[in-house]
Length: 421
Ligand code: ADP
Ligand code: ASP
Ligand code: MG
Picture: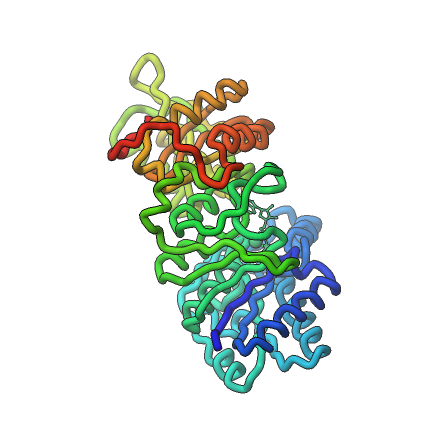
């Protein structure tokens, strides 16, 4: 007998028929002798619809009230799914995040889980029940509801799997697993049998919506085994796990695109120690994550334009933070651009193969795609390009690195060094 945490996302519980399908799957797992804790998202596009509804009455809603609203989506799902289970004779009980003992720090709309005390879940399991938990929500120290960032039900599932010492945390999706690229954009994308935590983390942070990056980070830190699989078919999915040596043979594991980015540029920043600290300190205090940073020194040498990217949803807050220090750091002010996308290639094999960046840039150049910014990590290369070119760039790179084939053909020289240029 295993203890399984199963997470079903919005698409998998989009309507009554989907709910009945999920209930059947849970019943099958239970009849195989397993204990099951289920985490569900809001049905279909409910969260987006609730956000749109809020904006109709207030263009800038209070984050606390937004959390009150958004948490209702998951609460509908848990009740409906539990009712569907009861109907087919499966004993089950639903819990909200707070009832399930999920505690989060008090940052509305982006709370981080700080503790899990799953007393009621353990008790219900002991009574032979299936437990259905609302994803995406926790309780802060003021006893207010906090949501855990978009895609946050994944975080709930991983945290519960960790707290309950579950044997596995399974994510049921409308795709059969993690693919070499979004199969909606690249039809020839291939399902991966396995992927390392680090690769999954980079892909997720770089826009592959298949798993929330925070959830993967947590799973890696605590060694929670993850599996991504289809909620509609009975096929093996993708295992996300600790890296093994053989994984380095594949140079590029996948390609991801993030279309929800914005570029902020502060013009004519003086070249003086402490300026960057002033700017990024203000942004950090606004709880915004900055990704790529580029400093373009002007020809005179004394002044530079400082550009960086932020998630598009944080643009307003980031601009406000930047404006607050602009009088100190710039004479010309700030401009921004939301017409950008970030496209990335990811693979642990990049550590030991050279020439990858050159190959990426020349493939994009051949396709006439302009690169505005570049950043790299040990296992990733990202470029900022015009948003309308994002899909094409993903397809070009998927082809260039032959990701449609079971094993990537390594044409580059194998060298034991870190540089990839
Ligand atoms: P959920 O309904 O569980 O929240 P999501 O919609 O967040 O699921 O994630 C599944 C979607 O992620 C798929 O429909 C797919 O289009 C998209 N996706 C993006 N990149 C990938 C990838 N590399 N592999 C699989 N799916 C991907
Ligand atoms: N319903 C939330 C969202 O759409 C959380 C989730 O689905 O994971 O982001
Ligand atoms: Mg999701």
